Length: 229
Picture 1 (cartoon, rainbow, N blue to C red):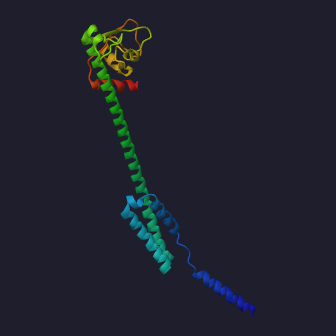
Picture 2 (picture 1 turned 120 degrees about the horizontal axis):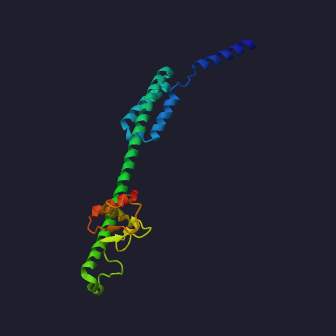
Picture 3 (picture 1 turned 180 degrees about the horizontal axis):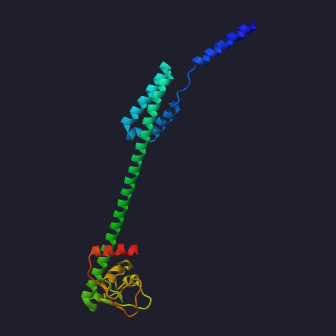
């Protein structure tokens, strides 16, 4: 009798083991990717593709839980996994493209801000030159009596400049009687190429021509060239 009871218990356990359903192979992999893509903005960037992916996965869930056909369900899970892999690749490409476009926009804005700054500085330099030319045109007596323009000693415009020992082009351009702006040295350099082979080397006694009439674009170009050196 005890042996019969033991056989019955063993038979029941075998029946339960045979009736239990194991999870399909592809289910966890597909579920992980579907959840990951939902967090990575696939719903917004690829709404139709993500919806199709969800439908395939949920069809597999219905087959697995309702029909309890793990083999057929695994076919849908595997298909959902493949769709998810493709969608993840496409999503990565789109995000890289958007990041590059954002970087280019930032570069354009930075360059525009730099151009605006150079334009303002060029306009200010041009205004200073006009004021200095006006002082020159008034003559010493009228300039002294003028109440609107104050002329300081040594600030009279000069058409040329004699290089002193140890001086550089930026130092010369920065002098008040020259441009009062060291970044405009390329203008002097371009006008004296016949006697300056290397802008970093000047010789005492060289007489440099100092251009007095140049455009705003010339000033902007000079500052850009100066910034690269």
